[in-house]
Each structure stands twice: as structure tokens, then as C-alpha cells.
Length: 540
Image (tube, rainbow, N blue to C red; front, side, top):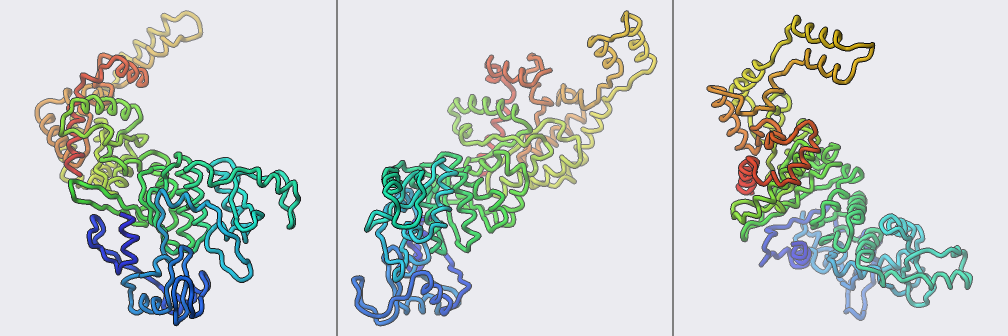
């Protein structure tokens, strides 16, 4: 897609044959005089005459990649309110990088006359500016734990090396000992594709000659920490006035782009999906991106990874995710064509039910089909319930009568403590204990004497089976309405009630036994998760 975009900028925005892009608009906030001044300052204005690349009757410009165009092209581009093409000048304003050509950015460049010539690439620019060399070296040190050095003493070429000399360069000419150490450093072009690709993009950022950068899969060849750091570099670049357009499959790169330094800028997210031969686009505008990533839940939990999956399922906790992921993988092995494989669904948790609405809003705003699985007590608090239903695109008001019927039935189950009976059991503990110290068993008996089994405690253990008559009808209607929105209640009450035969006083121990014994393969959760999977499928 990005290659199509780049090529169309040279061809009067001709999109013939494009499979995805339907239209392009070019915007500018400058006029002809300002454009000419910028070109002259950045690339230099060449006088009329005969040159190896052709004859020009007017002043003209030569881009770093060898494209040339005359002053008439500038007039054509800025002849109306909005440019219709960049023609040959596209090479001056736009740079396209794919996985192959960005590794070449670290190759040696020829030396040049610092007084009369202009640098044509980042290596030449760092030859003249040691401050930029330091910046590039600092990024390489952060990403690969090794600095970078520019070799200015190879005669006709300028080369980049990995590492740093122990002897300082000093004032030219350098000492023989410095030169010996410098030439002993390995050359950067001889290193792996990861370091070359990373530094190729960093160097282009430092070069800062292009107003638009188009980069295809910048994370190629990079490990996750390096992809994250590169995302931060690209985000910082947009603050310099350069528009960066990136296509990525990396959640780490996206997290870097939307890091704290980036969330203050104009960062937008576009999610592209395909069904059959049709492409679908969902966009999160910059203000929404800033709002989303100012929330610690989105920033520090793997919520946004769901952008790269067919859909997402939000749970309350990590144990829920682990259990449901295991069940998903089991039902996916049935080769049922209507159930997406577990690899196509991103399961993540929100550290409790009170934040699920935030994650749901974030993912659905980016066009990710998203469902959530919650315990029965999601019905308990007005605030949690209303926010989740609203985030799911529903209206809580019509559901209130059904919910109130269920709440009344649950609250009616709350028991009371009879004073005389509680006193009897407590006195019994004290009378039977000889000495001044109570044991843990004694304390537990006292707690049991005054413990009031609340209706919600009972409901979380019995779930739907604890209801009867009109309450069951109200609960089922409410449950069905919530499912239409992608909200799935655990009707058993809580996760552990899928396997009540396993001790439930330790959730981690419960989960370990259920998984190791294979009990998760025969569970009522399979039916619910099939419904979840089909909801996600139908929401594509």
C-alpha cells in the first residue's frame, strides 16, 4: 500500500490499479516564494546550463537521489490552492524506505568540499557535524549497547564504524595511534541487518531533509526493545515538522510511537483489515490517541496489541485469560470452520472489572471486534455496569428493570446475624480455650459466628442456578441483551465455578490443577467461548 502511495506522488496522483488507496490530497501551508526559498536553502539552487543530467534554461534543483527539476516544476506544483502532483520534485519532499533500501543508508559516502558543496546524505552530514554524530551514536548505544564512530580519514570516502576508540580524536591531523584504533573498528555495513536497518532510519531522521517519510515495516530485523525505541525516534521526528507514514505489524513499535513523548503530538492510528477482496479502514484520530494513551491501563497493559489480531477478548484478570486461552485452543482444534482459532484472538485483562470499559473503548475505536467476559457481580455496581454498557454501544436505561429484578433477588438472600446465637458460639470458644492465647482455629470459629453470608457471596457461588421463576426469566433476558453488545456474563458466578469440584480457596492453585489435569477440556466454558468467538467473527 505504501509503495502505491509513494509512486502515485510522481504520477499526478494516478491511482489506476490501486487495490487499497482510493484518493490522495496534498496539502501545503507555503506559497511559491516560500517553497523556492526552502529548496534553495536545503538543497541549493543550481544556475541554468548544461549538466550530465540534462540542459536547463532556468535555475533548477537536484535531489540527493539524483532527481532534477526546474523552476517551472515549482510553479506548476504551487499554481493552485492545492497541489495535484509533486512530479519530479517528489524526490525532494518524500522518501520511501522498505526493508531493503534502508540498510543501504549506512554505506560509505564520498568525501566532499565542505566550503562549496552540500551534503547529499546523512553520512556526509555527520562528516561535517560532530553533534549529529553524537546523536546517532547515542541511539545506537541505547539500542545495541555499542556506540558509532564516523571515519573522516579514509581519503575519498567517509565510513561508519561500530565502537569507539580509547584515544580521543583530537585536532587534525590525528595521531597514528588514534588512526590505528579507528581503522581496527568493524565497519557498520558489515554488521547484521537489524543494526543496519535501525541505524538507516535513525540516520535519515537526523538528515532531516524530507517533509514526508514513508516507511514499510520499520520493525523488520529488529528485536522488540529496538522496535520500541525506533517507534520513539519516529514519534519525535513528527515534532520537527516531518510527516511520518508507517505500516507496521509490531505492537512494540506502536507502543514506542505512542509513548509519552509521542502522545503530545499529532499521532493517528489507522487499522487495515481485509475480507475476501475488500479492504476495511478504521482510524483513531490524534485527539483520541492522546486521550487513550494518557490512561495508564492502555499504556502499560498489552491492550493495544489487539490491533494486530482478528479480534480481542477482555477479561478481569490474568487467571481468566490463561484459562479461557486454554479452552479456546482446545475448541479451535476441533477444526470447526465457524470458530476463529485462538491465534486470531487477543486475550488480555484489565486488572479488574472497573477498567474494562476503557479498554473496550480503545479497541473498538480502532475497529477491532472486541468482546468481554465478566463475573456475575458486574451487575452489582451502577457505575461499573453503566460505563461498560455505554462503552459497548448500548443504553443502560432499558436494561434497568431486568437488572433490578435480579439485584433484588440477590440482595434478598443476604442473611442476618442473631445476637444470642453469635454470643453463644463466641462464649463457647472462650470457655473451651484454656490459657490467655487464642489459636487460629479459635479465631476462625469467632469469624464464622459473626460472618454474614451476603447475597452476592451466595450468588457468586450459585450463579444462574440460584434463581427461580421470574428472576430466571429476567436474568436470561438481560444476559441475551448483553451478549448482543459483546458482554458475556459468567452465568456460573465466577471463573472457579466452571470446576466446583476443585478446591477454590486458592485461585492460582485452582488454575494449576484445572490445566494440568486437563479438566478445562470438558467444561461449560466451551459453549460460552464459542458464542464469544462467533460474536467476534460476525463483527468483522
